[in-house]
Image (cartoon, rainbow, N blue to C red; front, side, top):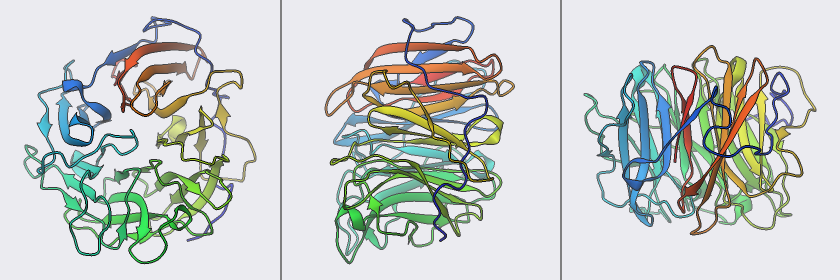
Length: 396
């Protein structure tokens, strides 16, 4: 792996900036509405993805936050409501929602096949394991049920902060997590990001391998996010940890389907404790790679392209805005690529709910609309996706 700081960075065009909430109600500007939907069955930590046919796939956690079930629902193209949820996990209660960072994630691969991962709630059972398993499943042939979940951890232990999954149209499926090797020290500085890759649509996976190098480890309870595109680019956004208390947001980028990576420092943060955060990563305007993360209670973002070194800082909310912003998400309009929605939660904590806040920015006119909605449950965060008419839906 080649490690360089500062590569693959450039500011999002048109000077996008997260502004402080100035409106009230669900729609600050009726011309750019955001539709709010509660997660089915009172579920937590939803994750959504739109397939090539316009169907929306949704996964979430339901039941006891300490021993939750993974649920799956589809909203078919042209419909306004999600269909009846079906249970993904075969072993009841083997997922966990506590802490908000350990939830379920999904990705759509070749032929829109659904791939799902989650942090197990129970100790891994295989010999030599310690801690929870990194569980993976996929929608079985026929699209009716999910295959039994599999633990992908073969040489690692002490899973925390959940994991993430990405897939591409070539049949590659990537599952990433952070953990310790089964031999050696188990402090944060020896924690690392690991990748298990499948080249056959998730039928089989190779053993996990360590990605990040250097003196810094990984922040123990923060989530991470991975994303793959059709060009072979694979990106992983995570929070590092070192002996002096730096908990920086780091981006790993591969241009060769995960065979080699370059590392970029996105946001520095000195903190004595883990902030229990989750980042966002995906396609941004003009097919850039858009990354969003939390630093000191604020939401930051940067768009990245393959190109020259840039010293510009990431865009953020104004310094005088309130803190407590966590778990950012975003969605890009499917209508002429003209709107960007950014959302996060505020005021949440351990066993404490909060509020959902969002901003919708028109990339052509530079106008914006903002909104805020109270009532986010404890352990919850949101997901967002674009509608065909240029509006957005946020599920929470």
